[in-house]
Each structure stands twice: as C-alpha cells, then as structure tokens.
Image (cartoon, rainbow, N blue to C red; front, top):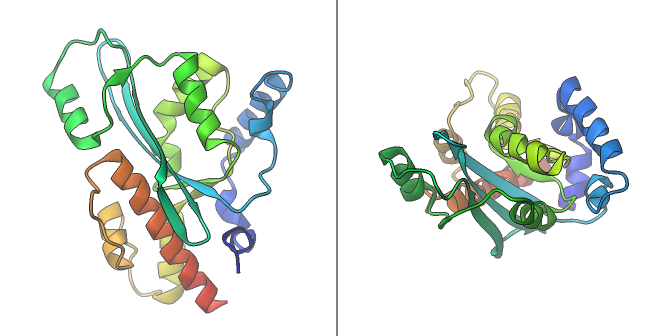
Length: 220
C-alpha cells in the first residue's frame, strides 16, 4: 500500500485548527493570480517532505534554520535536501547565535528576502509535509513567509508527534505516550544519528513517520 493511500486512511491527521484553515483559504485567494498559486493546488504524487525548523530570537529578527528532506516509497532521499539559515547578516555575534550555529549545522546566515524564501517554498512545493510538533516548530517560519511573501505554508501537514501518540495508545493503552522527540524515536527503535543538526532532525522525523506507517500497514 502506498504512503499516500495510507494517509487517506488517517485523514484526520491533516486537520488543523479552524483558524489555520481560514488562513489558508485567505492566502489561497490572495495568491490566486501570483506565481505561487500552484502551491495551493492539491498534490497528486507520492512524495512528502520532512521539515524541521529551529528559531532563535535576536535583537533585530529571529535566526531561523530550516531543513526539508524528500521521502517517497519508504525511502528518505537525503541527497534531495534543502537546508538554509535565514536572518539579518548584521546581527551582533552572541553566545546564543553561536549555539544556534553549532546545534543546527545549517551554514551561513542568509537574508530572509523573497528570493531565498521562494527557493525554499518552491523546493517544498505542494507536497504534504511531515514533522515533529509541526504547528509549533514552523510558527516563526510561517510568520516570516507571511511578512515577505504574503502567505504561510499551505501544505497538508502530518504531525508525527500526534501520529506517535495515536499509535502508542492503540497498541498499548496502558502506556503513557512519551512527550519528547528522542523518547519517541527510542520507543519505535528509530536511529537518532546526526539528530543535533536541523537536517538530522528532519531525517529522523521522516524515519519515524515511515516506521509508524509500516506499523499501521501491518495492523490493517
């Protein structure tokens, strides 16, 4: 059974808050005649994009590191990854920023202009995105996209944290679902090599998603 057909059986995972759904419709209408209109069209393929996003507040604007990794047919295509760090190049060096660079391993800071943001959203395209606690993790990115491009990510989203909790409750109702990403990876025996980087986090999200999909297929 393909990944997308499996997702059809768990359509509630795509649901967002009413506010999110209304925002997406407003963004879609605003972008109807723009070069970004295709991003709001339903995706008909078999690929997804695992997304990880880490933001660090700063004096002028937040520094945001993003990694997007393509997955399809039970395979994570790490060779097809997009990694970028966005922020003001004039931000003073600080221990907080040094820690961000060390943890994210996402390269030099690039300006959050329309060209760089367009490159990111065009890489993601209109494919569904998966990730751990997506709504919270991409909040700063969506705020930046709304400010610069006049829309937030419109993609269907699967929060792997909710998928993990749902499957654990189904298989082991007596067990309380671990709340941290590391605990969830350990719970389903997913390797966590390279987790310190934003690309490693996106890859681990993809592997956890695929592991849970296999479990769902076996239970079907």
